[in-house]
Image 1 (cartoon, chains in turn yellow, green):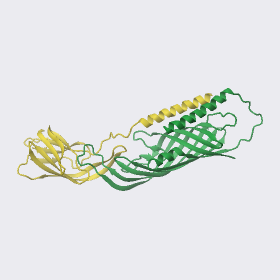
Image 2 (cartoon, each protein chain N blue to C red):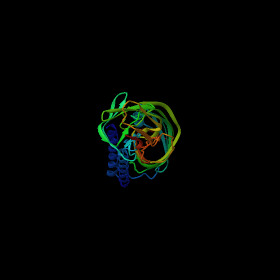
Image 3 (cartoon, one colour):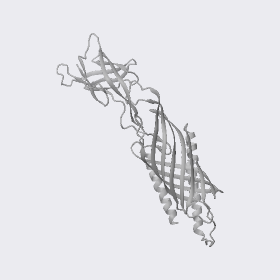
Image 4 (tube, rainbow over the protein chains, first blue to last red):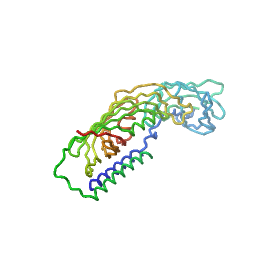
Length: 157
Length: 228
């Protein structure tokens, strides 16, 4: 009988371990996915000074998806297109539209079981599409490789 | 629910037997009968059925031999083709595994009954390949919705080793035919590193937890015993 009690205790212990393990969720991604392109806004007359944009819109082309809508910000996060090596966004400040073309190379990097693959971007290039009234004066790329969420690009206005 | 019912019935069976054990005192015969070598061949039904329900295939066979007193030597072999498709990854795991170990029977049978409750320590070795059919890039806050990327990439020649602590009940329901239930606490000792992928599923071990080397398992099996 003593042995039976022992074996029952062992079963309960094992069941507890089993439940503990089963309930520990590692199905939730905590390590992050594809990094966004971080853009900081700076003053074109005093390049070290942060300058907030007002009534700012960020629209992704060609489907006109709105990323930012009527915000004031000194920095933004731009989710680049992971299906293609380039994408275009309209940057709007006080109803003045400027279009930027982002070109880059893509590399899939495995993160974890729950997070799957993320894309890291290489050799970033940004072209400002010329028009008559540009509010963006200058674009400076700090890092051409985008691997983490940080400020990668400075826009002077 | 079905699992619960089956295990409940097994528990009830076992309790009834132990009650009978208490109520009667049996004098042992002074002439000991020849103790035969008992070898059991088993098949994991639970795993087989569960796999079928998930577009997968799994076969697990085992053999145990009552080689000395209450000790059993256990060898099992299994083969799996496991399919998994979530939002991010769509892949197959194919491979096979072996387990070898010793179990000890804690249960004293009444008369010529033949049930056992064992605990044991088993070693597992698996060899397997992954075939990643497609993946979808993980991009929180995407405006350009990531599309699935078909790559059909193989990650081959992966191996894993682990140990498991096993508690098991086997009940002789018909002559020579046993129904069994086992639970296992597993600890992964080693697993191959995979370039730009990871160990997700291991045949015989089940899912690998990202943050821990512990795993667990449950088995429902049917076995047939030969006596020599």
